[in-house]
Image: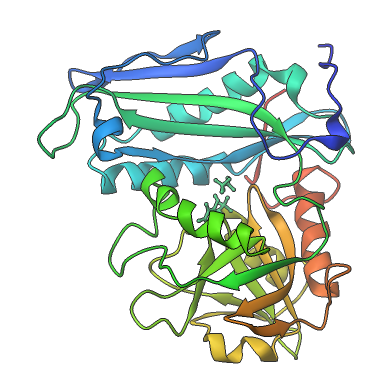
Length: 341
Ligand code: PLP
Ligand code: COI
């Protein structure tokens, strides 16, 4: 396969149309066979459930070129599981997990010319999603759905790549107690748009949200979970029922414990104690691990010892080990890497 002529090293996190996408429809109580198509456009009823009542859930994962030239995906089974849980919460028919993994492989293979080469700093982002497609006017779940996967080559999520960012404590809540914060539903992102536009206008890179019940604990940002390193070198990971169960975060906890010998505390983290931490990072598929240099809490600056120039040493080790596993430089735990070709 000949790679596309793309300036891989300068890609940002934006959409570039690729050749093929996967489509599968749900009708009369069953998912059809599904397959690839060239058509990036979707035609549906003006009254489709997704358009009226936001009945849509999605996933995000990546394909990587390894050092020895294979194309692989990272833990797609966990994306299949999470999409399944997200769908059930929004009364959508869950997409079968085996079929999900086969579809991911099929669509990545069909777009292999867009998978960035090893060492380019870019990856192929894979976006599976599903939505209610038939007309719905009374508030109820749709009867028909479409599941799709498209791919797009991407670079770093935050401009500047590994440069530390500044985030601010948001006055808005991302999720309600017992709401939908723990699933990957489009509605969680729609409600964050105003907050992110305002944060950018004020010169911040992202918002960090507090727990909606007491507004005293750290939850997560608009598109990533948060990690801290405390003064004793422990990895401290906020735990909450209303944050997304990040696959990157769960993998990093394992890496910290089993590859780096770090002690990990998964617990509620109070905003008040954050000033005692040495390092902070955001983790997710898109964010990978993005170092945070500063948190602004209504004008009070919480500056991490790692500063604004580079990643702190522990976050750097986590980053190197995780990306080493993803790119085949470091042996992965059993089942983490799925080879596409
Ligand atoms: N939190 C939110 C709100 C996200 O959108 C994402 C991105 O998927 C994450 C966390 C990170 O999750 P993952 O590591 O599974 O990509
Ligand atoms: C991802 O990391 O895959 C996400 O979905 C986050 C999104 C904000 C781009």
